[in-house]
Image (cartoon, rainbow, N blue to C red; front, side, top):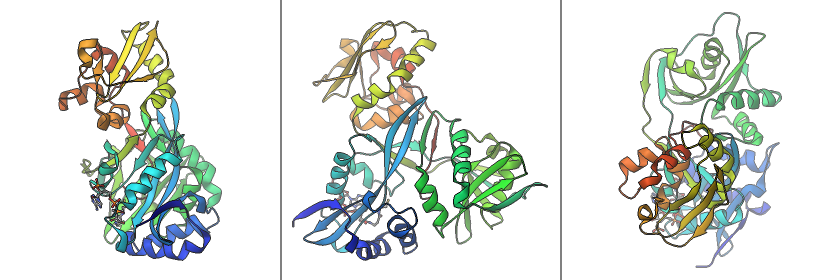
Length: 386
Ligand SMILES: CC(C)(COP(=O)(O)OP(=O)(O)OC[C@H]1O[C@@H](n2cnc3c(N)ncnc32)[C@H](O)[C@@H]1OP(=O)(O)O)[C@@H](O)C(=O)NCCC(=O)NCCS
């Protein structure tokens, strides 16, 4: 079976819609159509696998911005992932994801909202828990607030409100502008804007039968949040996703339901990512009791290792080295490669990981690891509702 990986051809749009309808959801065909034929189409963002000349597996790459502390990193989110039924179980997605990582070496961080376990087979980790949901009676809009459906003209305001809200989190994954267009074009979602003439707020609603969710609430006050949530769905009871930068969601009343699932993430080139995050590390070090520290930073991933010479709190380049089986005896720390995204992006930090995983060994470098890799809060944009 010859598998060819490449970009989608214009004569394959109809076949792609067939695969989406068969394997994702017939309702998702509308979203796929936006990506190929809408006003903000990006057909070249699809990466596909063919068997012979037949389109057999698909995924679209959404460029994202990841932020760790004050550092922005190029990231991506594979979305609308599917293999035609007749071709499943033959390694097509494995080939496609390996080609995808190679095609975007400059976007080493990947994020996926996806089905259980599958992406773990492909090197992804459940690094970031889904947000808590506040299950509440749908609030009424405060007096003086108007709520209306968002239009493409609202894009700058949407980007501004989201950026301000995401500032409240240590880690953020941010949609590109074109994704907001696709979301606004989708019959699956309702994006609303609310204003009292001065302040603005927004939210995205999603309903499935009698279940209603509200995500991406961004507001400057609890009144703004209530106004946006009131218009985002029609149901009486709503599930509103918490965000670190939207504290008033917890004050809406009702019941807080902790997350039952998580986002997958993957860090493809750890030394390169650590190099990019270096200024953040140096600031964290300068704020800590280790300010001005000098020495060799050693992070073993057992089958390989990473070192950086630190002089007066300044990190040199992160260099890749060979296997270091016993890093603690050399003054370093060990973190296995399948906990890399947890370490960089997750809520446990180095210390929490060491408490849970026997092969996370911090050794004498523990204080430094805790400064560089603290527990982090996250605010994650995903195309589909989490
Ligand atoms: C899930 C899906 C994309 C898998 O595609 P595929 O081409 O059959 O996947 P592959 O054959 O490349 O499998 C890759 C690995 O994942 C495993 N795997 C395949 N389907 C899986 C599933 N549903 N759950 C968990 N693991 C799965 C395989 O065993 C294989 O592991 P291995 O290579 O380590 O042995 C395909 O079944 C599909 O389109 N399903 C419906 C749509 C869907 O759920 N998409 C994902 C949206 S997030």
